[in-house]
Image 1 (cartoon, rainbow, N blue to C red):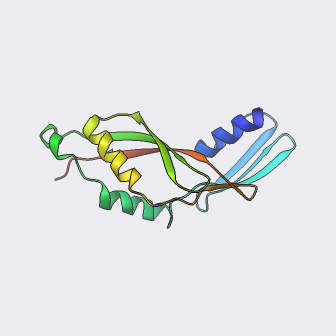
Image 2: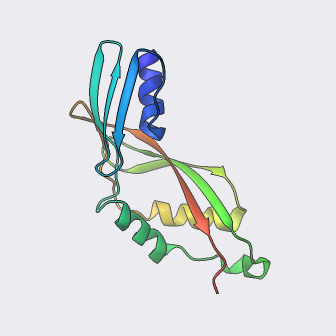
Length: 141
């Protein structure tokens, strides 16, 4: 149970937890090494095809400020949680932090439009991974 909980926490936030466990994470190549008690596993985090820059390029090109709230000049972030399946498809979208329905809908529209991701791999086997992503909205000039 401890190893399962650690794997979940480690997959979303690269943290060290517990006395008999150490973890090392490198964000440059998204590889993680985790040892817990006598178990060792090597993981590669899920990733957007083309990497982080391609992901942000997709957001920049696709995200639009909702027209129906333009007069409010509202800014902020919508935080969305979604599951990256072991096949790389995105599913089970959930708004974790809302900025209002028009912004939430736009964030979901853009995320659902993304191509299939490269799934997380643990010990050579693709596994599902929950991803939490903030989507920032700034008022256009």
